[in-house]
Image (tube, rainbow, N blue to C red; front, side, top):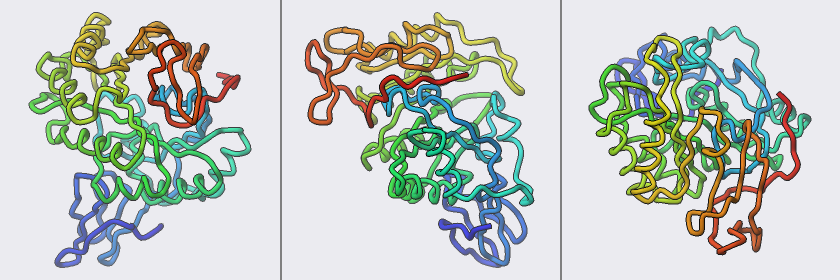
Length: 346
C-alpha cells in the first residue's frame, strides 16, 4: 500500500479523498466508493496500488484515439473497481470487483520494462476507470516519461482539478474522455454532474494535453435530442471545433438490455455535430472504415484511412513538427508522430 497523495483529514478520524469528484468521506477502516482507498488510523492509503487486472499491447486507435500517435501501440493496463459503475459496462468483471489487498503488485518500472520489450510506444490505463489507481498511475507515467514513452488514459474525466494537474505534470498527455450523458438523464448515473466532464476536458486542453471525446449513444438512455444537443453544444462551446468527437454505437452488456443503437441515430448526431461546426467526427463500433476515416474539414481530401483499429492509409505533409493537409495546407491536430509500417496481430 501507498499513502494517498490527495486527501484531507476531517474530524473524528474521518478523511476525505480528493482524487475524483465524488470526494468520498471515509471513516476508520472503510473504503471509498471505488474500493481502492482505505482509511487506516486517520490516513488514506491506496490499497489497490499496482494490483493490476490485465496487461496487454493494443492499438491506440482502439481507445479510441485517432489524432494521438497514429498507428502506435500502447501497453494497456487496468486495475479493479470504478467510481461510476455504469450498468452497461462491458468490463464489469473488472469495474465491479474491488481489490482484496492480496493480489501481486506490478511495480511501475517493471510495467515500463514490459512496454519497451514489446515494442510499444507508450502506456495506456484503460479497461476500468484509471483514476481509481491514481497514485500508481502517477508513478507509472513518470517512469514512462523518463524512458521516452507516452502515457494516456481512457477515463470518465470525473477528476478534481488537483488530480488532473498532477496527472499532466506526471506525463499523461492523452485523454480519451467518455461523456456518459446529460442533465436530466433518467435510469442511470443520475447523481453525476455531467458538466464536470467537459470542465475537466477543457482544463486538460488548457494544460497542453490532447483530448478526444467519446459519446457512447445508449438507446432510450442518453440518446434524446435534448441530450445530444446539450452534449454537442458543450463540445463546441467549451472545447472547440478541432477536438475530435467519437459517436459510438452501444451494444447490450451487463445489466442493460436496451437494443443496440440504430445507425440512423448515430448518423443523425454526426450530421448535427457537423452543423454546429465540429470538424472531426467519427462513428464507431459499426465496423465501417468510411465512418472512421479522417477527411480534411477544409477541402474534403481523405487524409487517414483506418480499418480494424489500424491505419491503412496516411497522407499528410509533416513540416516543422506539424501535420498539414497536402492539398490545402490546413494544419491537422495530431499529437505525437505517425508510426509508419507498424502492424498489429490479433
